[in-house]
Image (cartoon, rainbow, N blue to C red; front, side):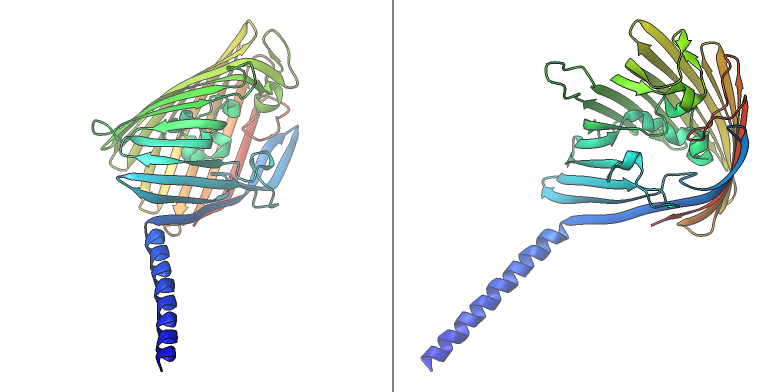
Length: 366
């Protein structure tokens, strides 16, 4: 009998230990969170002039790039958290990876969040992205990006980035700092980048200013913006830049159903001692016709040396639900001077100074 009691006590102890372990695991899990999210954007495009021909195609990411991601946090106590994000970009129409084939090309970072701010390390956006919500491209989509996205306002990433984001200060002010080392032995500055951003939001007013500088990068002016010559020479391939630096400022203000917004950017491209400056003025009005329907009208004027471009955009967005919407977007570009070819972002150059694209599509968020 005594032996049976002991056996029962041993079994009970084992069950108690297991239960305690499950409780501890549950308690730890209860202090953590992991979220799976994503966005799918697919549409049909009509291009008026693509290398001298009309083009009709199915395309992914007309308004926003299709993506899926995982983000999460763990409570470390005392107001501190461990945070992470892994975000993949892909093309829905053929299933290929975006961002040059990177698995988590959109974002990949880990870090700490504390009462004094958030520090993260990995592949991250620079602070030019603060201007994105105030630009026409926020609703006009990919083909409404500024020329070649050289000013990086549409959202470009930096590898090996160390970023700090302050908490909200003085009723709406935030400050961001980022540094990305180049990783070249013996040459600390080579391939490195730095970015700074300040944003302010209160009530119906939002403002932001950002500066980013990148050492030893490349551009393809003929393919990306239709410019056949730069730095006083014919340029039909890739150009190695000593440094690309860009500064941008913008604001938006909502008055009833009307949102007025604008962005100005200035991008300096240096090739040794030579320099070329690209400037862009972006302005538009977004009007909420009904709770389910918004319309945008906007214009972007850009200038580089003796060449300037006018971009016009009109978009209509209709919500079928909180997560699904239909859109129609018309983008048109006209190039003046310098024998430049009209080239909307990601679209092959036209054969002349004009190019237009009409996009009809469906977007779903999850």
